[in-house]
Image 1 (cartoon, rainbow, N blue to C red):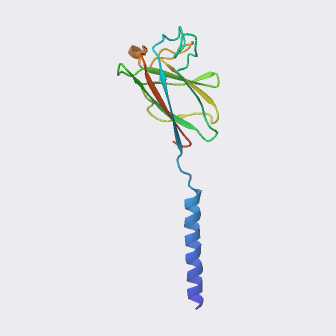
Image 2 (image 1 turned 90 degrees about the vertical axis):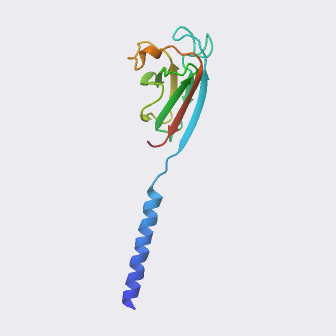
Image 3 (image 1 turned 90 degrees about the horizontal axis):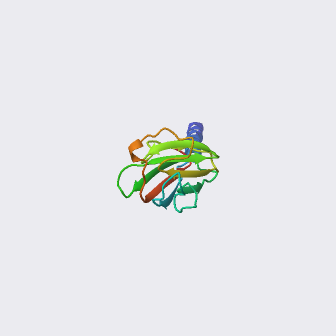
Length: 145
């Protein structure tokens, strides 16, 4: 009887520890934001209107979002330069789409410039494609990579 009781208690502890381990795992949560942009020449005018913001898309991140991936689809079908700015500074540049998730500050505001960026100009990862026409940008924000 004593052995059966010890075996049942051991089994209960094992099951409880497995349940706790599963509960401790966090799951990936994503949010997708999409915007469009016009053919106004940057950095001479705004992205979507002559007197508008240089940023083609401005996204306010949530306190739980720590990474971003993005992709731009321009109507000419070629990759274009994208510069990402956050908290007044340059965060990242990519050509057409991100190759891996980019770490961001949760709760920050992200500004996406498509085509030539702001001064001081950043190195161009796709210099032959700084000219944008019209298109869309899709940004995916996530709590983990």
